[in-house]
Image (cartoon, rainbow, N blue to C red):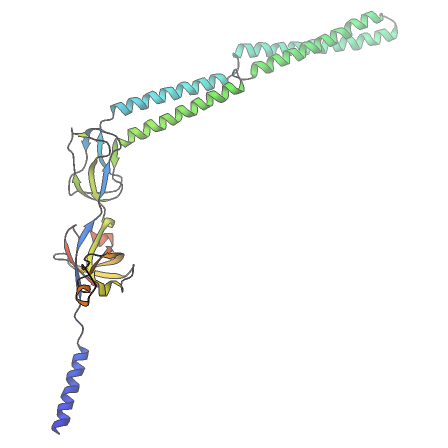
Length: 318
């Protein structure tokens, strides 16, 4: 009976030991931010700073503006040159003066009337010749009149057609249109340069830092404002080499930080292929335990707002 009791107690202890849940393993890390540095490609004095540090802004909100006098003048100059080129093309494609065209149209009408009259007289004299009332010489006179009037009509119509054509020759028109296209491209360049002197937020987020104040000279390409969009916040933590082989991109993790409330879910986005610590000689069992690999995970933007760059976190693999 004693042996059976002992065996029964051992079995119960083993069962209770098997039912114990393993202790949850967490890995230390911190929150990291990928900042968007907003700069202008051209230098200038900072005329207006529209945001402040810690401010939340929406995409498209104005950030800052540099002085634009030079660029505005260049745009006006390019616009005037474009209008001049357009006027030159319009002048070459235009016809002669309206009064001249009307006079030539009247000349064509007069030539048509003269030809019709000479044709009628020729037909009448042709009948008179058959009846013996006139001589053949008289009929020849009207035949000559008909031929002369036909030539006059052709000449009048040719002059009218020429007057209705554009003043410029085809090659000259092609060159003028090319100049107008080039002038239009210069206008687009001037407008782009002018727009670059004032920058807007490329995405919604928090203003992390401003590097200049109004009135300061800003070199070309120097950031004026840094933004932190929520989608650019990530978790960075470290796992031992015994765990890194089990991780897959897209896997789920949960992060906990002090004062953040409920755990923050995230998705694995990067696993480093290089260890953060390498033993000096060989990979012994003891030295392998010192190897850690950096892993990154991305929380949802709505959860990322609870994290601050540099804030410590504890990450649990799901």
